[in-house]
Image (cartoon, rainbow, N blue to C red; front, side, top):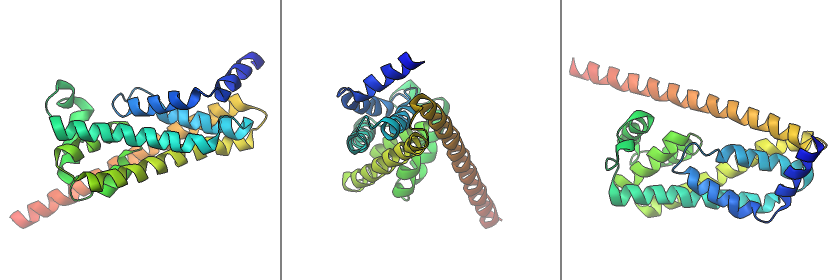
Length: 211
């Protein structure tokens, strides 16, 4: 166990951790199987328990990676659309795209900030924002603010347990990642519930007006 801990601490102290984190967060904008949130949380725990890597660098690196990835999705939606490829027309991505397309122009701030914490929704909102013609001057500041808030949130979750367990960095990582996963699931469920209630109210209003 000590050897594993030493290896983890050596990786955390490497200067390559920052470009690797940036690349991972950018790629996660397209490939939801990549656990960028988990890695950011883990690095937050390590930074708080051991002092490495530097939180002062982790925050801007993670936030910039989020902005770059989201902007690339936005540009794909703007130039290609959201129905060119088969993976955009099936499964959770297709359902998320349909929901995002209906409201991205009327509630961009809410969608962009909320979607940053839900992988499938994040891709759908960014693609839909580009495809729907949301101006870049509106999208970019919102995406930058959402990315910064996301980075601070995940690092803070990790740092909370890293500070509480300074002598056990691996335990701090394990607990913080587990808590972050539970919180992510809870956020996803709450957002889905709110969306269902809004859809129910909207359909009820349509039915009343039609009567």
